Image (cartoon, rainbow, N blue to C red; front, side, top):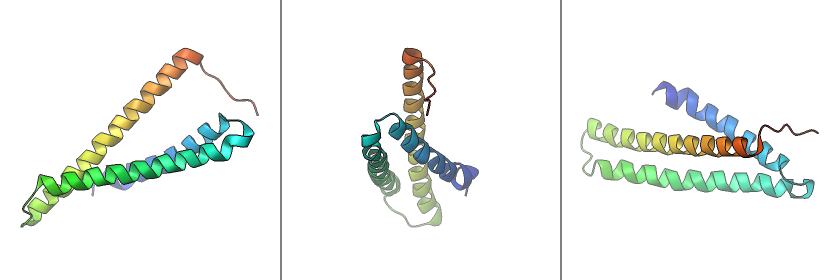
Length: 112
């Protein structure tokens, strides 16, 4: 296993999910904060299911005849690389959204 799959991926999920929940729920009025948190949860679960299916499809169709260990390993790596590319695209979209919002509104600290 690589360093990325052992350390970085679980750390990213453990940090991004609570951060997204807090940020989105803090940006909503008090009566809609629970709805905002459930929206993050629903979106994360649908994303996991969708991209797990995509990675599984890539794994299966990258090696149609899986007879040796090397061929099976090639399929697993193809699915893993697909997941990494999808994650990288999500990071780029997040950074782009943050940059556009920062340019439009500036840095705001919520006072509680």
